[in-house]
Length: 92
Image 1 (cartoon, rainbow, N blue to C red):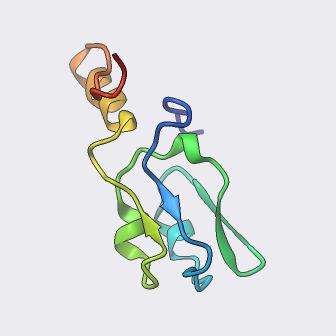
Image 2: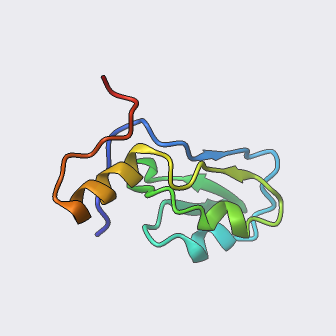
């Protein structure tokens, strides 16, 4: 099961009006953040998003945006790999 990162601070966004229901985001997301419901993508585990950007890069309808490598989830991963506290610059 994927790690849940800092709550409600991720940059992941989905525009359901643009979604064509191809399911590519479901296929490429390493943490199973997305699910298809009634032929549309839905973000079901937002706090598990590590902001890698795979979903946005593979979305043919440009329905997904995420600022990969700049969010709090990235800071958590970087902190863990270096043995330091996470620091994304958004929390004082």
